[in-house]
Length: 184
Length: 293
Image (cartoon, rainbow over all chains, first blue to last red; front, side, top):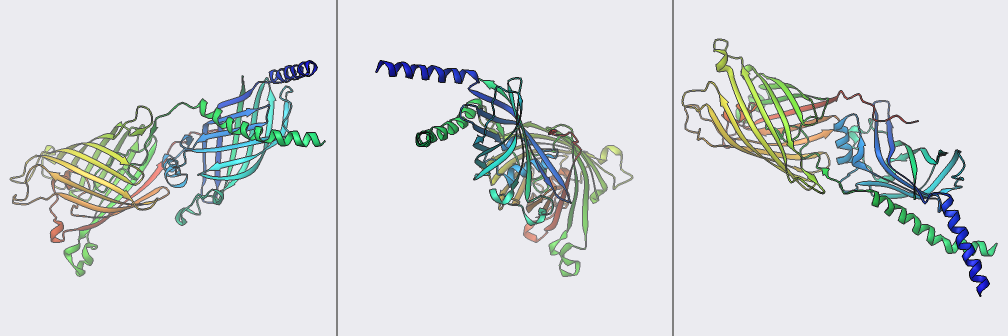
């Protein structure tokens, strides 16, 4: 019995030391998420510079959240329409992604790693299961996550009226750029 | 091997749980925020009267407004469509709170100019503000009478716009108004005090019904040329950068001095004008929002 408890203790200690080798979490609250709608008539883009991201290197879990109201458009009328008519941001204030990074890299080794994350992607109150590909860069103890993917409006019940149909792409390109710092 | 599978099976709920906690972790990063209420009205006008909305910084609003003749002119005049008066306006946001505008109306050949400042913005969250408050000051110069001294051509208006958006659909506004005209018809008073009430109700995401009424403090019905309170009903339709406002009103003029002080038509007599405002917004804000690698 004593033997086992010593073994258990040793296991716990080794587990602890494993956890201490890397930070508990990587976090940012100023991540950039941009989207791009490209049609022959008009190109529209907007960026959210306050995206919140947390990455748990221990569990490979990743969570992203952003307020729809934080998307900034060059044209403020468009921004108002985006919030009021398309995203209905008073009803659905946030967009989230909660998932797991597949084949997570060694966070103690600087380098650029192609990764993908699979999980639940919620926009406009509609959740889809998605696998998003991107790159994860480890440098100077920080983690940079970049991704470039597409979101069909129909997946999230975002309606475009027929009058402006030609001006807004049916598939929106999304780019993400998050620089995460360690947080214990 | 079996053990490993068994172990991973055991760990699965732990992982799932860990991810939910991750979202909670994000919640803890978040401080409660005050969020301004947006789009109390779709346009800077309810119908004729100004709404609390202002143009955003570096955004230009080009407005063309038409009022046709009276519906009771009958079929020969195509219910007023044969006669049209218009106002053309250029209105610009200097900051997100301050805007200026200039316009020219065919009626009385009036040049008008105004400044509009957002004092308060309705908001939700900690330190919430229950109403939006905007101040409007305007001056008009009527050039139709070339012989009149310049001072007689001038008139001024000041208005306090107080609005509240009640939920997604309903917005209501009060418009206490002071107007001074340097020259008036015999019997009329130079100063007009009025309380306006306006509002809008959204029918769909892009269409709303608007209404406004301006109650004057002084009785003007017994004047040699009687004037009446202005009442207007309309529909706002928004399509991308345009807002179309279609309406019926007993006022021919489109600036405060004309529709609040000098409305000569009566709804009861069928002195109703069909009209529309067309607004096109242009952004001169060329600032890049963000560069992506």
